[in-house]
Length: 476
Ligand SMILES: [Zn+2]
View 1: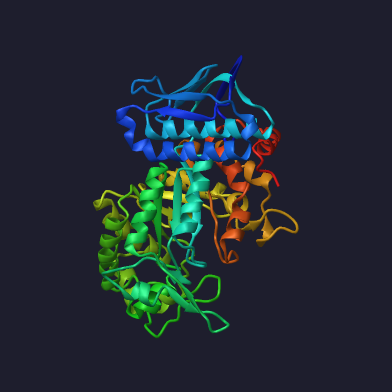
View 2: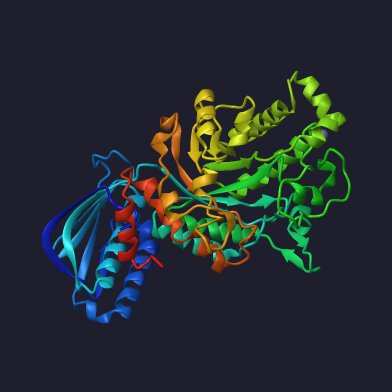
């Protein structure tokens, strides 16, 4: 199983695989109806593929709601497989989801091994981290609703529970905006080198659809609007937000660009305040990611407005001006009840300690130190370990840098300073060199499974992980 459960006790008996399961769900958990339906359909597909593996019986899976279960984690659950039936006890929706996912994997492993039964067992399980994330960049290449749903399905298979959705960058703005429609009308499209128009955006309706789908899987979606850098697409739509307005084109190249938002003009912050109003209504979840990475100060240094702002707030340098701007945006979002995430560059200047830093630079050791010093919680997504746009090995597609399956599995949050401030780990998938869904999943799989296991179970066992990948039929 992946991620591997915390405790498995074999009870020495057998339960024949039934032709179908009947899941008995308490009224309080009726919200799981669609998830149970998914479980049943997945089991049906397994049976259809291997009809000889199953008996003619129907077995019950009893969901047992135990609000008072002595739990070291809210998603703790216990699975009892005995000869006649399965009992799954939990106190949270996700506890039940994770238990059903484990059962699904157990059935798959049995069938793959040519067995017609499950071994009776008692499994107690819960994740080490609440935050087990996967990131998706839809700006460099755009992926429609169905692909995002497939991505969420993949996350569900391995109990990843946060989708970090990178929705804006130099190469495209991807959200319909009723307040600032040029953002999607202009900012969502670019002319490629061959003269073809490339782009797209999600309508409000499509975003609601995706959020609803994610909710059904118990996955939290975190929108990211990258500020103040990586904003050429925004400037193409609203050039007056730049230090030196001109006609901007949505970028067709990859990289870091000097034209970023002018934070010296008060209208930039008021524009963002209105925009965030709209976006927070669209994304009612707990978290909001404000980017903050790779913002060159080249324009600010020459801009009379930015220089004046620096002076007005008695700031030592332009790095500190980004810190001031970050804190302004954090104030707006916190007033709306949001927890704010940002890339670790924001820690380079004094910022609000409530920000959850996404520690990504290098191996993220220095960022963890910075976070500890300033008292910020952090999520680990180190460039040199969990960037899945890096090639998985010689001859594999992706960037020239390599992060193998074993390297990803090697992430060890306990080896970082301020480990008590670490909320979890995340793998990032930037899509400069990922033009379609096939490539997307090739980069993701199976490295995201390594991340999923390390975010769930503190015990590191790479050889065991490989053999379990094989048993699940997931190793190419
Ligand atoms: Zn400026």
